[in-house]
Length: 79
Image (tube, rainbow, N blue to C red; front, side):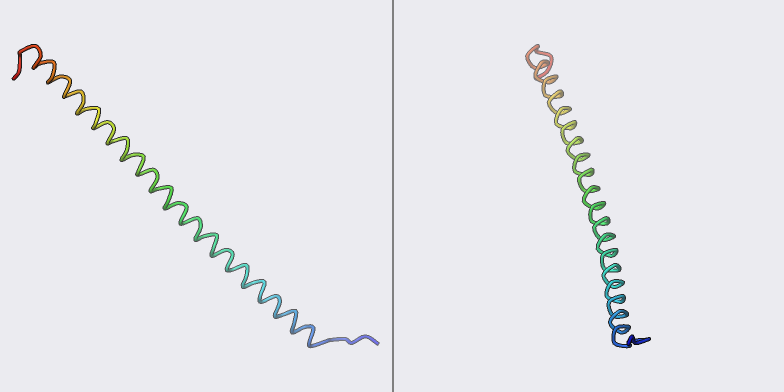
């Protein structure tokens, strides 16, 4: 004999469905959080690369000025 509606099984089904929905929401939240963190870190990396490029260009400029002044001192144009 088969039961038409087993309330216990139906309650278990609803609980499992709610748990699955909650897990999906938590997964989506974690995914969005990961995307935000990744974007922030990538932005920091790009900024660090830009700062390094600027510092290297500035260092090159200082070296070129040093060479220019040194050549002028060697030639007696500047003291």
